[in-house]
Image (cartoon, rainbow, N blue to C red):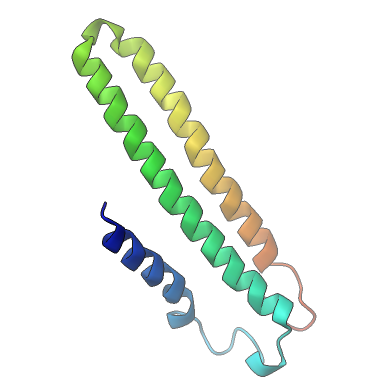
Length: 114
């Protein structure tokens, strides 16, 4: 992907939270603590970067595996096994970031809960 496309995807993902937010979620945004607001912003940014990095790493691993299988078809079984293991580990890192974000989002911030 080009840098311009990646930047536009990042901006779109970062702004999608504020666009799709309901007004009834937080009682009064003016009364919200800065820690509450920053935790949401940092969580969204962290999940965005983890998703972009995971997608890039998976695409790079898949293209390299396919290229190597094309060069040496006899080693396809061992390459496929290592590829699947690598993809599982890459995807687990993104899921860990998602779980950390969910823990942050569902923490009770006084009267501000989801």
